Image (cartoon, rainbow, N blue to C red; front, side):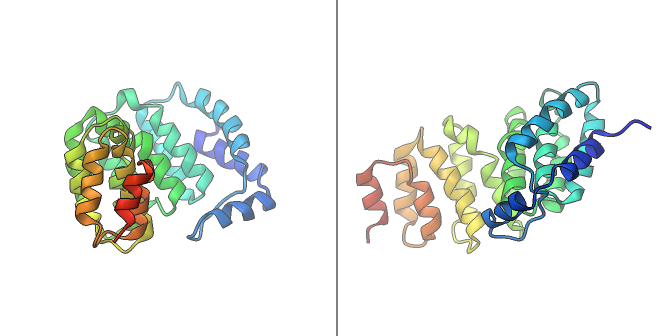
Length: 236
């Protein structure tokens, strides 16, 4: 019987598990995480084989393997799933957002899964169908911390390129007072990315909201700004 891509990945990860790496990986995360303890350099070697195995598969077959990988709960398998789905980006259709939304809401439960899935995989779909930003705006209201963070970190790359500024500010407005540090860091990162092309606009946004904006989000947002602007932003 032919082994599936998902099963191959899982078997390789189990074979290469390392207790020392597992413990150091767990220390990286604030939340409890499920990890095999496979070095990223080793995962990248496995990925080379996986990429070739997945080439003849249809998008639906790839997505089915991604689902199995996400269901495992392991960080490393989630990383593989996000990258596998990204391999089919040229075949994305608008309705694939339903699949991605399910993955974010049901399987994403740590920082690595969230950012790997959103930064490229979901971002490339949103870039292909910009009206899907309205879906991100709905995510920003979710009670699920990872869905909320996903709304922001999906826009990191276009934000760096100077795009979607008004949408970025709208999403930041929704999350502005959120007490969850993962959400604060997410929208702060989004604003920081936007500041690379729109420094004045982001600085003005921070100054307008500094009285209520959580310090974590504020510091992320101004990180790339000149020292004099940072001083103004954090001053009373």
